[in-house]
Amino acid sequence: MTLQGTSIIGNENGSGNESPIHGINPASGEILQPPYPSATEDEIKRACKLAGDAFDTTSKLSGKDRAAFLRKTADNIEGIVEDLVLRATAETGLPEPRIRMETGRTCGQLRLFAGLVEEGSWVDARIDQANPERQPIPKPDTRSMLRPVGPVVVFCASNFPLAFSVAGGDTASAFAAGCPVIVKAHHAHPGTAELVGQAVRHAVRECGLPEGTFSLIYGSGRTVGAQLVQHPVVKAVGFTGSRAGGRALFNLASARPEPIPVYAEMSSVNPIFILPEALAERGEEIATGLHGSSIMGVGQFCTNPGIVLTQASESAKNFASSFTEKMSGTGAATMLHSGIRDAYEKGVEAHEGIASVLTLTRHNEEAGPGQCSVGTAVFSTTAEEFLAHPELTNEIFGPASLLVQYTDHGQALDVAKKLEGQLTATIFGTDDELAKNKELIAVLESKAGRLIFNQFPTGVEVCHSMVHGGPYPATTDGRSTSVGTGAILRFSRPVCYQNFPQGSLPDEIKDGNPLGINRTEN
Ligand code: NAP
Image (cartoon, rainbow, N blue to C red; front, side):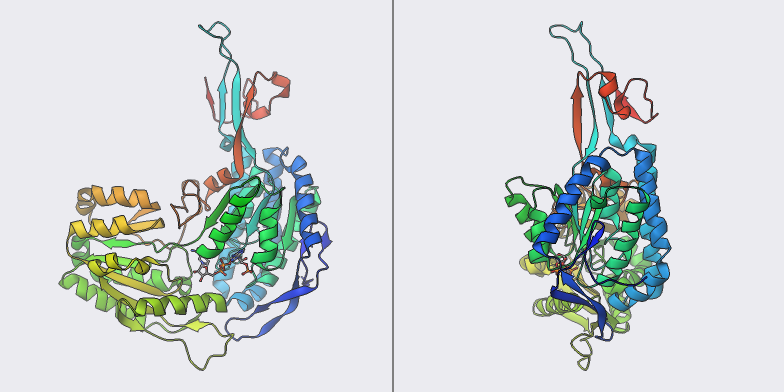
C-alpha cells in the first residue's frame, strides 16, 4: 500500500502542511518518509462535524451490522500484514514476530467485540413492567439499556503501535458500542497509523457507513489533541501514555463547559510481593521468571514489574543476586522513541540518587541522538527508606526494577498501604501463605485492578473477565477496563424508557425478547 502522508478526514485526505512529523527508526536514527503534516484547525472541525453526523447512523446500527463492520476492519488489517511488518518494525524498533503477534491480537480484539455485540446481551437490558394496581401508587413501566455516548477521540499508544493504536482496543470498543472514532496518531509510528487508518476507511466504505465513522488526525498533542478533546461534539476520550499527558487531557476535558470522561491509562509500577516460604522453595525459578517479565518488550509494558518486595533473609539475598546477574547479563536494546529513552534515563538517574545500585548499564555513549538503545538497571532499598522516599514509587518506564526488603509482615503491609493505584499487584507464595495473608490481599484489592497469584503481570489476556485498569494514577477512572470486552462500558451510558409503547422501544427491551438476549426482568 502506498503511503499518502496525510490525515484521513472521512473520505478526504488532509491538506495541512504545517509542522510535519516524520517516523524515525529508533535503532538507526534514520528519518522515514513521507512526512505527516499537522491537521489544520478546519480539518479538525470537519472531522468532528462528520463524526457528529455519523453518530445518527452508527448509534442506530444493529449488533449484526456493527459486528460486520468490526470483522471487515479485522479482515482488511490482516490483508496488509506484510506492509505493517515492514513499516512498524522500522518505526518502532520492535521485532517482526512482535508485530505479527500484535496484528493478530488487534484483529482478535475486533472479532471478540464483534461476537459480543452480535450476541447482544452486553446492553444490560432491565425491564420492570407496569403494575397499575400497586398501592399506594401505581408502578410505571420502566425499561433500560446501554446506548452509545457519541463520538470518541482515541490517542494512539506508542508502546502498542497496533493493539492500542488506530484500530486497537479503545477504537474497537468504541465502534462496538456504536460510536464514531477520531484517532490522534502517535508521532512515533505515523506510517503504521496510516496503513491501519486506510484499512479502517475501506471497511467504513465497504459496509456503507457514513464517512465520519472514522478519521485519523496527525499533529501535536498539545494543539491538535487538545482541540479534539475540547470540541463540543466529542463525548469521551481513550488514552494510553504518560501521567503528565493523561492528566493534561483529563484536566482539559473536565474544564469544558460540558465535561466529558477521559479514560486515560498512565502509570503503574505493578508491585510483586514474594512471601518467605515461596522465596525459600523456589527463589531461583521466580528470579528467572521475573527477569523475563522485566525485560519483555524492553520493559515498555504498562504491566512491567517495577517494584519487588521480599522479607530480608538469606533466600532474599540469593534471589537479589541471581536476578541482578540475569539483568546485568542482558544486552542493550532499542526503545520505541527518543522521548521514552530520555524519560527512562531520567527515571534511572533519580533512583540512583536514593537507592543502592545493584547493576546499571548506561546506554552506548557512541550511539547517535536518534538511536534509542538502553541497558538494564536494578536498585535495592529497605522498606524504611522506601517509605521515607515517595519518589521511589515513581514508574520508570523501561527495563529497571527496584528490590525492597522488609523486616516483617507489618512492614510489608505498611509498604502496600503506601503504594499508589496500580494496574496489577502480584503475590508469590504457597497456598498456605496466601490464605494467611488476607490483610495484604485486602490492601492490594483497594490499590489494583488485577490481583495475580504465582504468575507475572506482563501478558494481558484479552477476554471477557479481564480488568486492565485501576485507581489513579494507573488510570483516571478506576471503575473501568481498557482491555477485554468490559471496555465497551466506557463508551456507553444507560437510558431508561418509561411508559413507551412497544412499537417505539428498541428490540433489546421489547416484550417477548425478540433478540433472545439475557435480560433482568421484573
Ligand atoms: P505521551 O508523551 O503521554 O504521549 C501520548 C500521546 O499524548 C501523544 O499523542 C502525545 O502527543 C499526547 N500528549 C502528551 N502530552 C500531552 C499534553 N500535555 N497535552 C495533550 N496531549 C499530550 O506518551 P508516550 O510518548 O507514549 O511515552 C512517554 C512516557 O509515557 C513514557 O516514558 C512512559 O513513562 C509513559 N507511558 C506509559 C505507558 C503505560 O501504559 N503506563 C504507556 C506508554 C507510555 P505528541 O504526539 O505531541 O507527543
